[in-house]
Amino acid sequence: MKILIVLTIALSAVAQAATPQFDNSRLFVKLSENSKMPQSVLIKKVKHLFANNYLVMTSDASKLEKELYTNSSVAFTEKNYLAGKRELPKPTFNKGDVEIFNFATFNDPLVGRIWSFNDSSSNGVSVEKAYLSPLGTTKEDIIVAVVDTGVDYNHEDLKNIMWKNTAEIAGNGIDDDNNGYIDDIHGINTLVRDSEGNATGNPMASHSHGTHVSGTIAAEQNNNVGIAGIASNAKIMAIRTVPDSSDETDADVVESFLYAAKHGAKLINCSFGKNHNEGGMIVNETIDFIGSNYGVLVLAAAGNDYGRNIDSNRTFPASFESDYLLVVASTSKSGGLSWFSNIGPKSVDLAAPGSDIYSTVNGNSYQNMSGTSMATPTTVGVAAEVLSNFPALTPLQLKKVLMDSVTPVKKFSGKMVSGGRVDLFNSLDYTLQNYNKL
Figure 1 (cartoon, one colour):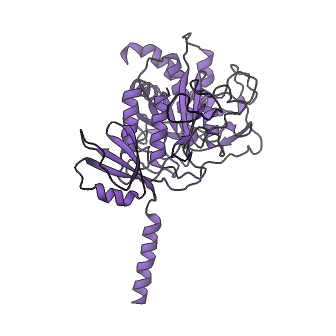
Figure 2 (cartoon, one colour):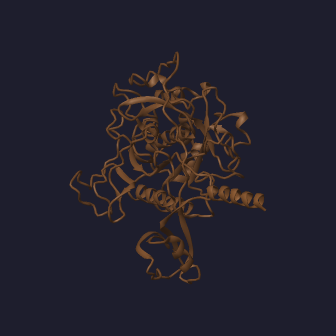
Figure 3 (cartoon, one colour):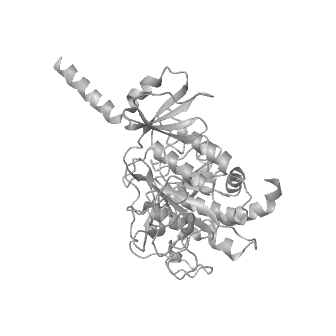
């Protein structure tokens, strides 16, 4: 009997440890058509998200969910789950001799360390080749939201390419544009909230993850400083939503996506994810909403779980099925998939360099990082440059361009939809040749 009791306790402890945690102060509520939010002493504040979706601030989400379960005004409820803590990719210094490449189109002194700028024949994404053959189009600025750990917006290679909310006056403590956020000059910080529960306006990074992502996308080109980003006309909107140890919440992700879309972002970089979803679809619905209503394409990392097939062993947001989501696996300098990269014949769309990517980190520094977190901004940089040249492309057209113009890699067949690696030169040429057919 004692053995049975001990075993029962042990199994219970394992089950409890595996149970996803949730924020008991917030609850997603989707109302039925033409219905109003029910009243309850448990409801402290209600924030409309989009369509019939609301985020309710509550004294007890679990009790409120039970209370609303049989209410005909409520279509369904969804808890605000946390992603779970996990270690983010860390910067690493180059060891031993570093191969330096000569890229003639850039004067940035450290750009030669970015192997992914090489042509497709050398397993890169043809950044140098693309800039050697300019299209002659008039480029437009493209706002790219980096939903991550924040961005060092004072970095020497990023400060001039940061998005600025010109309707807001810096440092006056006033919500000048009446958008619900005070002093959101470069973006917002959903991890630090004021007494009213509103996200604050300083997305400065404490972890270098988001800063590294931003440099890959759009570090200032030809400024005789540091490196160069892939995109020449991208503006980085910084949104701090991912804690330094991960564990982001669905509510913060949804708020970030909606903020980005409403403030003009056309691309959102999501180098984060979680291994559970509890059946919730609010993040997927948000991606659909901003895609169809604001023309936004969301790009997400496939994940770093050592070849996990995310079709069957799902991870999120990468395993969502939204048409407005593009999912990226990681490749190495040798041309194969990175040893850590997840795959998915249906869920993963294409691959991009993500191993040993040299980029900006906090404090005016530069280091390597590896992960599908790095492959995603490589793809976002390509997408931003294509969209800058062809700003009329819809998100679905842009997604088609990126996937149809990959460099095919035989060993990728059956591991992702496109079976290839993203390529800037190919994407630009494909768009030029097929623009009227897209």
